Image (cartoon, rainbow, N blue to C red; front, top):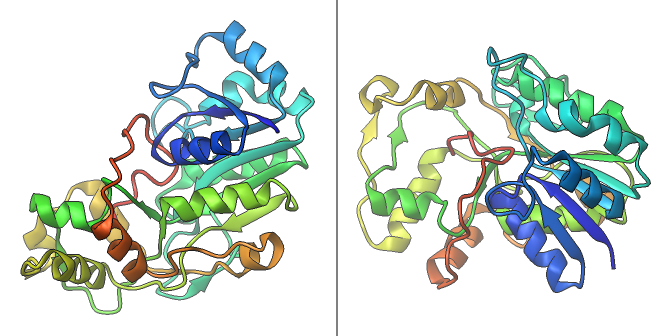
Amino acid sequence: MGNMLIFGMGYTAQVVAQRLRAQGWTVRGTGRAGDIAFDDRAAVLDALGKATHVLSSVPPHRDGARDGGDPVLQAYGTDIAEGWLAWIGYLSSTGVYGDAGGAWVDETAPIGTGRRSARAQADLDWQALSYRTHVFRLPGIYGPGRSALDRVREGKAHRIDIEGQVFSRVHVEDIASGVIAALNGPAGVYNLADDLPCSQNAVIEEAARLLGVDPPPMQSLQQANLSPMALGFYAENRRVANGKAKRLLAWKPDYPTYREGLRALSASTRPSIARAEPDSASTDHW
């Protein structure tokens, strides 16, 4: 079995780690849910020297903060590139595509035109780091403790009256299965998204139906009083294509639409994964 070092044991990375450990892998990681302090260079380099695989879920510094660079590449990029690693992975975001006016985007679409310019640069920097790099572009992530069901229960869900607005999303377990499928797949960039981009309103309405409550009232963006981050999210409109991952990785999402995903979460008694550190799409307000 392999030895995986994960930078940033956040919501998504913990699920990847759980699956790998169940298969007999050794998995170590940085962050509050990990066993290594990111700034403990000696410990990180020791773990890196033993690792066969590396995955980063650490987002770049936000635009305008510090130099906007990727903290993992800044601290350990040279060590990763020069190490004897069989595989390198990076969890990016479909936010790098910017606004597509509701059109489909695949991995050949230009990046860096939207609100996530720091993310787009980090995406490119990881690609340039090594011929072994696999970049996974993720839309809005949902799963246990982090879904429309939780927001409806908590009274934090919104339905926004914007005609033609669609988003893509992906269940956290499907991200993990995609990353694991890529361990034996060709390097490159992959979108990991479900099969049904749709409005956020449809997801909230399905969550309310499963919970047996009325959906929140329809509002305008102004009435909803959203945060600047959420407003930026609604300023972009795209459908994310997942065909490349299906073709080259033989990946198939277990939750091809939000309906299967929410239904499974509604029926599940599995405890929520700790929200340790932010991961690649954690700022996407789906």
